[in-house]
Amino acid sequence: MDIVILIGRILFAAIFIGGALGHFTNTAAMSQYCESSGLRPGRVYVIGSGIWMLVAIILIVLGAWTDLGALMLVAFLIPSAAFMHAFWRHTDVEMRMNEQIQFSKDISLAGAALFLFGFVVSTGDSLGLTLTGPLFS
Image 1 (cartoon, rainbow, N blue to C red):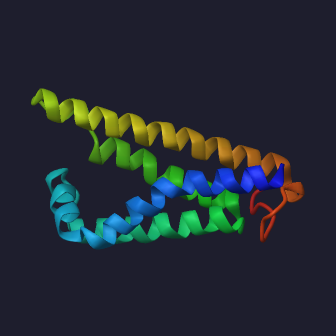
Image 2 (cartoon, rainbow, N blue to C red):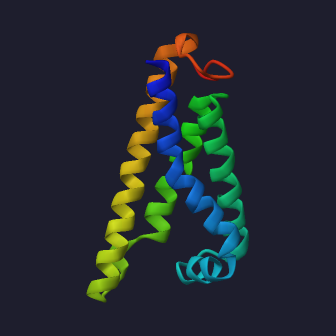
Image 3 (cartoon, rainbow, N blue to C red):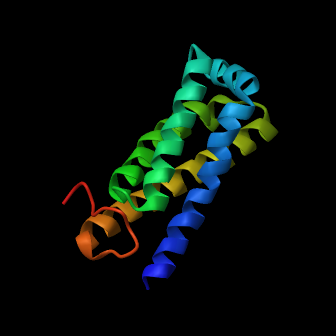
């Protein structure tokens, strides 16, 4: 079962790898979008959140304080949903729908990260194929 859990950690992290890399390869456009949502300076938020996501997914994939990595993702996803994808602020129907999809995705991924956190803490040191046990217990 340890290999299944490892594969699950890798698959869960996959969406964040692409997202984090996008923060570094598309910084200018993402910074403008960030600033249009009221967060300034956008470049600082974009680069900072890209680094934050990379650290979190590295922890999760390697199994080095996986619980901390999961909490880091929650700490990124909830504000991202609320500030970057505030669909209720848009009057354009298409923009509102797109933002609602992104909001729902972020909230769902935050729920999955919370589940991962609880699973890792509950399993403790008996979780296999990890570099460390959980930080929290």
